[in-house]
Amino acid sequence: MQDFRNRLLIVTVILGLAFLVLGSRLWYLQVLKGEEFGQFSMENHIRVERIPAPRGRILDRYGKELVVNRISFDIYVIPKDAKDIPYLSNSLSQALNLDSQRIEEDINSAVKKKSFKPVLITKDINRDQLAYIEARRSSLPGVIIEINNLRQYPHGDLGAFILGYIGKVNEAELKSNPKINSNDLIGKTGVEKGWEDSLRGKDGYKQTVTDALGREVVSDLFSEDLQNQKSMPGNDVFLTIDIELQKAAEEILGEETGAIVAVDVNSGQVLALASKPSFNPSDFIKGIDSETWTKLINDESSPLLNRATQGLYAPGSVFKMVPSVAALNEGVINEKDYIYCPGYYKSGNTTFRCWKRGGHGSVNLRSAIVHSCDVYFYKIAEMMGISNLSKYMKAFGYGSKTELGIEEREGIAPSREWKLKKYNKPWYKGETIVSSIGQGYVSVTPLQVSMMTAAVANQGKLLKPAIVKEIVSYTGKETFEHTSELAGYIPIKKEMLELVREAMVGVVNDPGGTGRGARMNDYTIAGKTGTAQVVSLDSQSDKRKHRDHAWFTSYAPAESPEIAVTVLIEHGGKGGAVAAPIAKKILEIYKKLKEEREADDNV
Image (cartoon, rainbow, N blue to C red):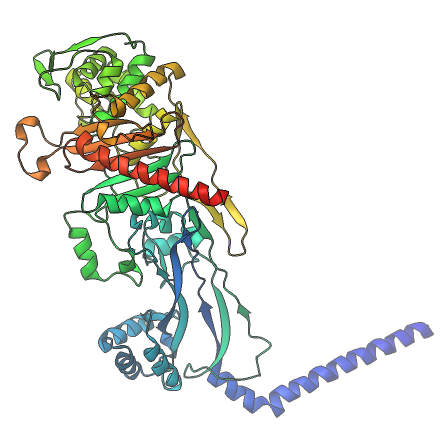
């Protein structure tokens, strides 16, 4: 019983002490400091300020910086803290050389919505403007200066279609990703968009105490309760692109309208992806103005169209590898079969012409590819039928996107079913005939042609192209590394495919080959020319818009293929005369760069 009384006494003493401490604290807060804290509560509150995370860099395959960041000082206004909006608007207008009415309208609009989110006034103020506002912060309630990061392009517009551009987030993007701030700039095209989640970091924040006018004050009262969190930078994205080869491709294109694609035939990695005309991604850094945007989208040369992945063209004779493989594999022909070409081919009441008016005489598969005889392919296409031809088009990746990760179009691999669905009309034999030489409904992108060429070069593996080699976090940890990915196999025996490969060597290296403009003395190139009609022969004129598109696709070295290069020049004329020499220049530079790098490694 005595033990119980002792324990009860101890508990009573502890409780008494606890209530004494609590009462003393309440007396201190409510009586001794009550008036001070009450006044502080009325006149002060805690503001949370965002610390924006830097976007990750974009680099080429060798670590050369393509997109980096620079510091930007941005001005925001917190609507609920802006007491005298006309005065504030006028003051900011004078300091920043902006329209005061627009500033006032932006702030009032946010006030009406009862928004507590900061309103962006302007981005990237200069040092003088920054100093002016800093010196007057006490008289500009609600104004905050956010230290942000803006994109910078060390190489100007080089690789613009690959890198893409950034822009202000729209309502749909805000709804799909609640982590995005309404004033943020996010990736809109290219790698900036495709790898937004990797490039985008995690914002931090800091809490500060402000007075009733929204001005920051120094106080120790709530110092223990204030929280800060550092921002986490985005990941660095290393591309598969060789910026030196990319630079060469864009320089060689010059003022031509067209595209150049170079890929590693054994991995599917894209080494260069050039398209002209182009745009400057720097125009989008702060959010593009309406005048510049209108000019870009109304430009007849379509500078925002990535012709390498979004441009759809009749492939012309570069497409002839498809019916060649199809006819060999389906047993329609063999390498010994000859077809006579008088310069035209009749099917029913229709006459189809060969590009060589006098004809090629008797040709087999090899000579038909080397000399690009149209009649040979007319004949085998009619024998084979559109169903078989369409099957092989799809096997080579035509009619579907490559899933590169940036903007692209799938093109058309026509079939009976496709035409019936598209036009509600039956398929005609003549449409099969013209499809065999890459005309009619057939439409492709230069990237698709390059991947087809790579598949021929690597013994029939259709690889999924890649534009990102690896992703590395800001701590240096690798979070992704590219490995080759198969999209499918070309259904043909290796010995049959070798016939096509050997004929492509002849295109460039035989005396009468149509691609002899790409010939190199110390490097064996295999290729195929293409001259794609834009209008019918009867409608052609001297106008450039009526001229044929010039194509050339190739791989090298033929004995042990490493790289495939595809060139398209819009309205360039003959593929052998115009596109083949361009491909040769690219391959010469590729070879030189490789030798220089190997020499450096040996040293």
